[in-house]
Amino acid sequence: MLEKSQLRSDPIVTNRATPFALYGAILIAAGIAAFLFGALLGVIRLIVGNPAWLLSVNEAIVWYSAAPVVFGIVCIAKDILFAVGAKRARKKVRFDDLANDQVTAVLTAYNDELSIHQAVRDFAASPHVKRVVVVSNNSTDKTEGEAARAGAIVFNEMKRGYGACVVRALSEGCRFDDTELVLLCEGDMTFRATDIPKFLAYAPHADIVNGTRIVEQLQESSTQISTFIHYGNFVVAKLLEMKYLGESTLSDVGTTYKLCRKGPLLELLPHLDSDVNLEFNPHLLEQAIRRGLAVVECPITFHPRVGASKGGNVSNPVAMKVGLRMIAGIVLGWDRIK
Image (cartoon, rainbow, N blue to C red; front, side):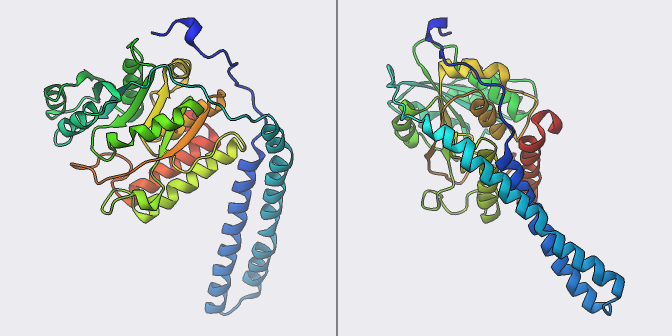
């Protein structure tokens, strides 16, 4: 573990102003939805013969749908004119150089027997990787054996759920004194070790470097990222960004590929809720931003997975369900979705 003197001395931020920009975005979305419903109701009204009572309801919906849009614009303008300006006035480009650019790579896995050996070997072959740790989330196949055969240090997390597996993986990655960086990834071959130098290039500017898959030229065909998931993920990321407007730029809240400085990570771990499941990545990012950690995005490549998907990208309906739960966590709080 790191000595206390190695931890960040910056104060942890817990009390924050009302996120007017977030509420403004929700109001605008509600107003647009109401207007579109009013337009649809107008078509229905013509089909059923244009009854007077339906006409008055239709007109009221269309007219009053402008109110939440106006209030939403005012809320966003308030944050942009006042809160963001104050934050930008205090900004400096951080450059906290690395004393050691070796990483401990931690891979989460659940029934990844077909891919984990290849994934471990891929990361172990990188000159930047000191060791590879695999945390199996109570897999029922040969995941653990294949990971050990490939040379990984293997643990089994009995508590079901992606959040529990990530918290265990990050905790195990912090136990090594010869690396100050923990690289979180999955063992399904969707991410590759060739992107590690990109993470390291951004590391002096951040406590957490979050990989973003939302770059068209860096996505292979036939990946789990459908067009719906691509843009849906972007929208949810921007919703989280608006909650902390002026503090971080986000385009991908679903990625599982991250580089973390061990000192800030040790501060963050007690605040992560392992009961949050497939929505855990935006939960992690929000807890980091909320506590004043510097989160910077890095474009990474994304590849077809080896084996069957078990996460939120199985299909568009499953992705929509996970995305709505992410939005609920961001807007209402993460305790509400467990």
